[in-house]
Structures are given as structure tokens and as C-alpha cells.
Image 1 (tube, rainbow, N blue to C red):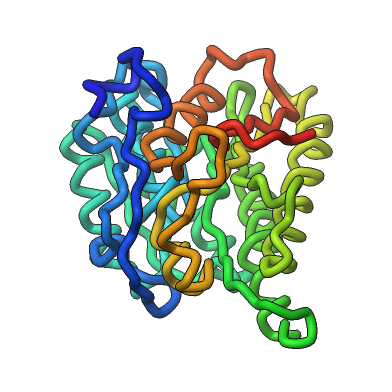
Image 2: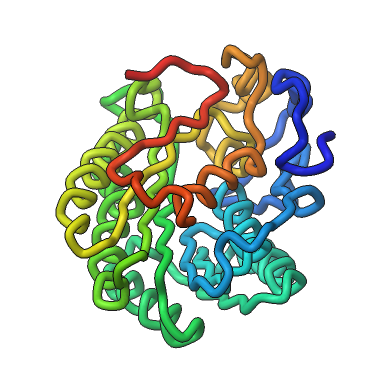
Length: 298
């Protein structure tokens, strides 16, 4: 295991090529019950003050990529609010503790972002708790595999669109009243936007929509000095995969088809979000940053 994110080593062996045991959790699942436990960078991420004094809201910040990003933001000097479903409280409490251990303010806001009223309240509660807002990360997502289109219900299609696309629209729209020049918005899309799996039609559709929303909004907000970008992860080991995100029989081989031969760890995604949130990316807007283990994309 590398000492921190700045250590040079072989990306093939930087993290092990995991072979997860058979497991399944009810949606949305708990990361604390996932085997093997993902690496969020809690023991490795080293901050250098790149987000000193910033105030960030990260949706889905209780686990996976969102949690790794929240930890990294805090260690870079930002105060962080995280949103999550009430059933994920156990994971959220742990992440809030790690944010506080970094000497930063942690605000925990449970609720369902597929509800428009909560999404708007979420922004106001984050602003109140943090004393402002200048980084928004729309990361929370819903992924449930369905083998055949005939079995993809109207209800699931609607729920996936509301969680992944509508919530991004509601939250971003509410946040704009608080974002000023130098603020950043970062949306989580996916390699699925470019190379959709046949069993993830609704999920892949939302991720393509997030790309388009990101690139269009970036042009709209550029004159206001607000940058909008996206990160497109490839296969990353999170609880999303075992809570009906992938068929159980595919979990054992998850991520091994990437050119690097393994799934990514959430800790490997966090630096991309830090880069896009920091002044180092001041001339970057409307970009989708691929972090996918070498999978070709357009």
C-alpha cells in the first residue's frame, strides 16, 4: 500500500486486484458491512491546504467516492456537509468523525434527494451549518441492474432519473443563490455514459444526461466565474455494487476487465475532485475527467 497519494508506484499493484466473496445487501447498503472494506484514503490521504477555508456540500458523502472526497476535502482545509439516506447513518457518523479529526466542521444531513423539497432544504441546511457554500459535489446516485428492458419498471426508471438527474438539477439550482466567483460544481458521471452496460440502461442514461448538463451549465456560468466539471469513474469498489448494482455472480470478477486489471478504490477518485475544486484547475470548465483504469472513452 502506498504511503500517500503522492507516492510513485506501479498503478497495477498500487491496490490489490480484489476477488470479493459472494455477498448482497438491501439497497442502499452499508459500507461498514462490505467485504473487503473499500479504501477511502482515511489512512493515506495527505492534505496540503489546497482548499483552505472553503465550504463544501457532498451528496452521498457517507460512503464510497463521496466519502473519500469528503475526507480529502477536509484534509485540504475545507469544512464539509454530507448528505445521505437515513438508513446510512452508521456510515455517515464515521465519515463525519474523520472530517472532525482533520480539524474541520462536519455537517450531517440525512434525507432522500429524490424528493424535491428535501433537495432544496439540503442546500439551505448546508449553508446554515457551514456559514456559506462554494463547492458543490453532486455525487449521490442510484444503480439497480435489470437484465431486460421489459422488466425495467416505470417506477425504477423514474426513481433512477429523480435520484441521479432531477436531484442534481434541484440542488444545483438552489445552490446558485449562494455560489460566487471562484465557486465550483462537480458532478459524478460514469464510464457508463460512454460504454453503457446492457443491464444498466436507466443508470447509463442518467450518466449521459449528467455529462450534457455539466457541459451546458459550464458555459452558462462561466461569465459568473463559477466553474462546472464532472468526474467519470470506471468500476470502483463501493457498496453500490453489492446492493443490486451488479448481479451477484459478477461481483467476484468486478473491475478485472479494466486495462489495469483491477477495480479502483474510492481513495483513487478523491484527488480528481480535489483538483477540480481547487484553484489549480482555474482554467478548466465543462470538462469530464475520466478515472477509469484505462478504459477507452471518446
